[in-house]
Image (cartoon, rainbow, N blue to C red; front, side, top):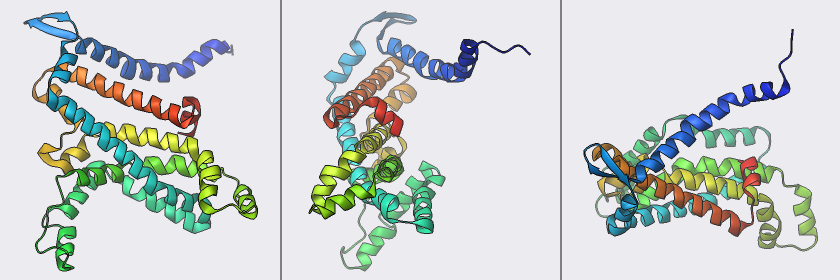
Length: 288
C-alpha cells in the first residue's frame, strides 16, 4: 500500500482545525467588521464609514455601559483570583490521596449543571422572600426581608461563581509543579510566610495566574445570562446592548460595531495585563 506524502498527511490532520478556525472564527469576524462599517443610505443601498462607532461615543448610555461592564469584569476577575488561590494551594500542596480527589470533585460538581440553573439557584437564595433574606431577618439583622437581587453585588457574586473553576484549574496546574524543597529551604534560611509567597510562590504561579485571569476576564466580559438574570432589566451590561441591537432593533450594523468594540477592549486589556506581569502569550496558552 502506497504511503501518503508527509506534507499531505500533515494537512489532512490539520484540515478539521483549519476549517473550524476559518469557517467559524475568521470569516464571521470579517463579515462582522464589514457590517460595522456599513451605513444604510436608502433601502438596500449602503455606503461605508465610521458612523456606527461615532454613535457609540456620542451616546453616553452606550459608553457608560461599556465602562461599567469593564470595571465589573475586572472586579470579578480580581475577586476570583483572591478566592481561588488559597483553594488551589490547598488542593495542590496540602491535600493528599482521597481527600484531594474529593476536593477536586467538589469544585467540579457545580459545573455539571447548566449556567442558567446555577444562576436561577442564586435568584432563589437572594430574592426578597428567599432563603438569605429570611435568614437575616430570623437572626435579627434586618427588621424585614431585604431584596438582595438586581444590584451590582448580585451580578458580581454570580460572575465569580460562574467562572471560579476557570481560575482554579490553571492555578492548581501551576502550583503542583512547584518543588516543595524550595519552600522548605526558604523557611530554613529564615524566610517568613509573606516573603516566601511574594518571592517564590507567586513568581512560580505567574503563568497560571495569567492564564486564569485571561479566561475569567474573557468569560465575565462576554457573559450575558448572569448579569441579565441577577441584575434585572437595569443590569446595564454591554452584551445586553449588543443583543438589543441585533435581535430587538434588527440594527446589525450597530450591533457589529458594539461587538468589535468589546473585542478591542478585551484584546487591549489582555495585552496590557501580559506586559505588566511580564508573561509571554505562548507560555500562558501552554498553561491554559
